[in-house]
Length: 191
Image 1 (cartoon, rainbow, N blue to C red):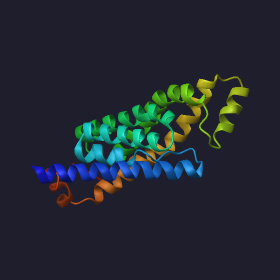
Image 2: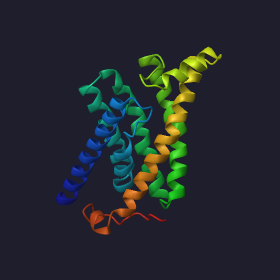
Image 3: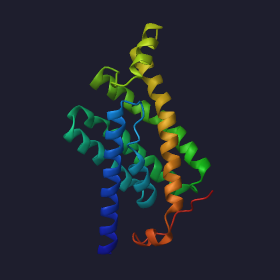
Image 4: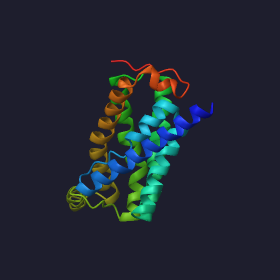
């Protein structure tokens, strides 16, 4: 049992590091994608919703403490990614179709949670090129919330679907021996 817990703890640590590194890279490049939920999705799929929620939350909290405490409230978004991913993988076979549907759901849910946080913390802008879109939509008559939400939906469609598909590919590649480390059966991952 202790060995299983150690493997789970190490895997969660790797997933947190993956989230942080991908988040830093995309932020440094100034692209309107996040890619900071891949570790959350992997931990939720392998270990369940609660570990996924913890990985997601700690990823954002640690990043916020390192770079900007104003980013910490966004942990709620990553927490929800862990919850939804863990529940989906637990309930249904994780196929490419499931991954795309999961990505679509998260592409709406994440902006629904993150947009109000972003408005409060940053006024609706995220410092990327996509701020031009937000300003154009505002000048076209949209409210700052509507403009920011539409921008966030657009970037999340690519980000969350892509991340869910990458998670599916990685989970398919993992052997039963990997899952044995956690005392679990490999979830049914189908083509």
